[in-house]
Amino acid sequence: MDYVIPPESMEAFSALGTPYTVLEDDVQQLIDEEKERLLSRGPADPRSRDWFDDYKNLDAVNAKLSAMAADRPDLVTVLDIGTTLQGRHIHGVRISGPGDGKPAVQLNGCHHAREWITVMVPMWIANRLVYEYDTDPAIHSIVDRVEFFIIPVVNLDGYVYTWTTNRLWRKNRR
Image: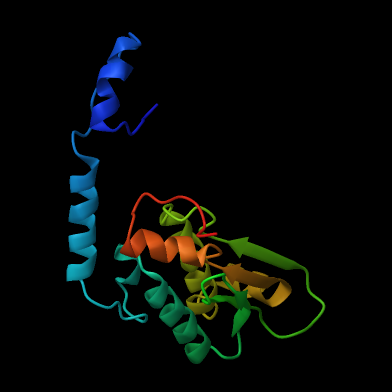
């Protein structure tokens, strides 16, 4: 198991007698390097092939959702499902082919603010459903038979906080 233990607690932890190996001496340094790397990339082009090469902030996620709807208005509708305590609009997309009365699947991401991969996974699924609809018969078939509701970030306030203030923040901002 991996644990993050502050330096001031290491003496007490060692006193427990549990064998351990230090994997990283300075997690904050890793966080700082990640932030510098992400900031140095600049704004992400939502239509770029390398959009999924790294994590994206909330603005980039929302731009990608809007680009999907602009590119495929026949398949994608942007949803505004509510407002957070800090006044941010919770966006998602509905992806479906022609017809009504279909079963629906809902995919949510980012319940825990610091788990950035949980934003990228539903975004990747949405991207495939939208941009491979015309080229992959299996995707075409399922999008025509199922409505997908994809909300990549449900904890917006916490997610933004991890990008601006505390990378390891886990909760919402209530």
